[in-house]
Image 1: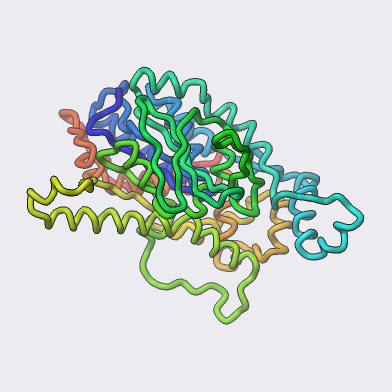
Image 2: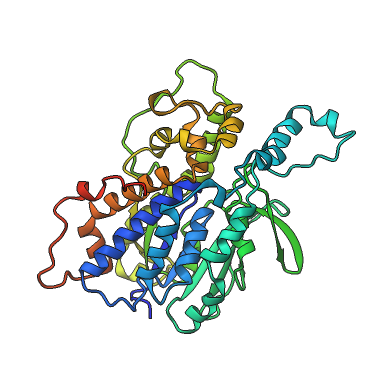
Length: 416
């Protein structure tokens, strides 16, 4: 069974940045264990994910009867990640996708007349489909729902065909689909195609086909046109929310100027656009939720009965460091063919000399970077241990001693 009150987990998108979520979840499992909570109880009755967060969400949902075990399996994948597990990173694969794609953008009008070159994206994510078969055993999802280990799972994608943002969901009990402006919800069984669609970063990965109401549609990353990331969890019945972001909401304040005075490279522009797609909507929705909660707290008791709105307690954990800066330290770990491809877009250097790190931060599926993100997620969550315990209502076990320093846990994990 899942813990009560019904708590929703919201995992945002962000490509390789989603490793940060894994670190937070690992810390939560540790805090929960130290509090002596029953391992058989799932802390999240509702799990909602978008983009790479949808993959983490689905993997966690399929292990709802063993939360800690599910977290450890996800951690192991992200700790040992290589780009080849997500997209073709060999020379031939990059030439077939990225090189042709960039060529089509430049002189496509010329070669289209004599060559059937129709690359669909910058990178070929066929390896990701194979990884999903191992990481996300969706055959278990219905078992988790029937056994009441999970109340509901939702993943979102954006339809290139209809222009709508679509939330696909599966629940233990029937829940009527909802419709909002430019947003719809579709009940049914979630498959690996939904995860591929939700994580198909625009331009970078190819769209995925999903049948909706008997009509096949092409879908891309669920972070596109996602104006209300919190909404699916609320519609599924969440009474409390843990939101794990992938940047900006709790980053250090102040402006950061990159390449001052220089005309922005294609990588800078692409990174800025992706940050807008992946990061901004969640921060805005969290602010909206807090405003609603504050407004409801000001209403007299009699007025509460006249509105369908209800206060929702939310805990938000997001990176305390700029992930762009972190990615800059690891750009050189990208496979050589990918580095060569991205260099043409303006991704160069490393550390202080790095350029285009924002774009690289979404594609750096390499262990040194993902391990650093996991360590950061663990440190950020452990630093807020008291808030986490209070949010879930966990009680420290008698004699339990809190870790003396979150900084010790933040040390980068050694590369084996």
